[in-house]
Length: 178
View: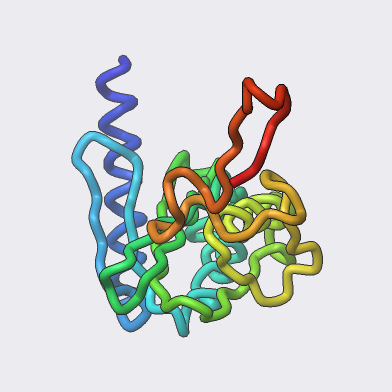
């Protein structure tokens, strides 16, 4: 029974990937689907990103109605330095879709906070850790680091020890910054 259920889920994921490739061919840069899984990995052109997500959410053929996670990747030696990954879930078809978007440093990424309620908080995390700016996110501020914190900790150019070193001086019996 478990094996047949897994096979059915894989077949559904293949149909969804088939439709995605045929309908959205100009939007898509790359498609990867691992065997025996219901996850599909798509790389999307930045210019079509928001329209693509809107169609995936609203169209009855896909029904990706929940945004599970957003995470960033810093690729400092590439021309498009940042990659943002979006994990979408379709409860109706039991399918997961990971969408990747590559863009340059200091480019704005469109916010999904008006489509998905969870996007606001997840975009704030990406902003706080990577410095990625999201256009039309009304509450883009730090949540994981202090408000006076300089830099973005998950960027590859951020120093491992930070900009300040905190030491305890045993002779003076207090903490000092260097």
